[in-house]
Length: 341
Image 1 (tube, helix red, strand yellow):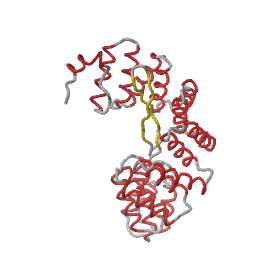
Image 2: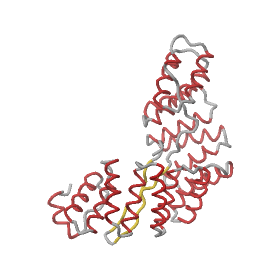
Image 3: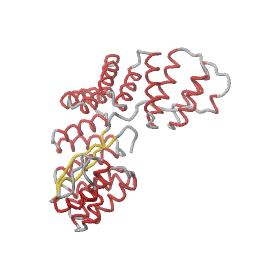
Image 4: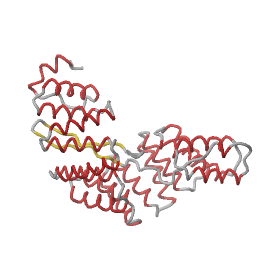
């Protein structure tokens, strides 16, 4: 799964209850303009020109661990004009985020803004990292600053739309997605985020239209392919949904969300064994993921295997108390195995 993505969940129904579908929310977008530095090329006394050369090389390697190591050497070498030092901190912030190492990334992003407050991209990265750390209100302040400095930066409007969506202000988010796509009609992230918002408004056909745009612009956009499959599933077109999940798994055989969602579609088609295969794979990829156990419990119960169903219901509840208790016919045994807390 691309860095910066996270799973969100929608729900469909079977005779046994809810089935969890995995959407891949681009919250908040993958870093734009991130890249890295080579420690061996950055050793020794460094002139300003050498630092710039090393930073440029680093930004073209695409390897976060290399970026962190090389930028650390460049930063610790000291000196340099504030703009160059800001660029180093920004590059390292993006690399840390790619490693899902949010705290040091947040420190570097704040330092980049401190050194060069005029760069919209630095404010945007700071906002994204704040959002990643759960600081949504301060993230909103940061992305407002980015937009104030560059009101034609489409990607910043998408980021702000994502933040508004998570703050349960979907209408404001939709306004920002529309603005982003007016600025840049060829922005796949804009179409994907707007499509995700349409799903929240229970408008799967409009979502599919936008997912089609995103995938046409970026044919390997695996997360958009998965989410389009979820939209088809929401419309009851389970076989068509499975086609998208199959396509996504051809692109990335270990994509967790694709396995969960394909399993959910198989479950609703009554193809319980196939569903269990996908949920098994999802659990192998992420053993602490409650929805995978819950969905597998529904599949086992549909096959009449109450022992395995109960075990998975219990496991889902142990991992996440928000999941419902087993069906009433399993309740007595469930209460004995997993007393209320």
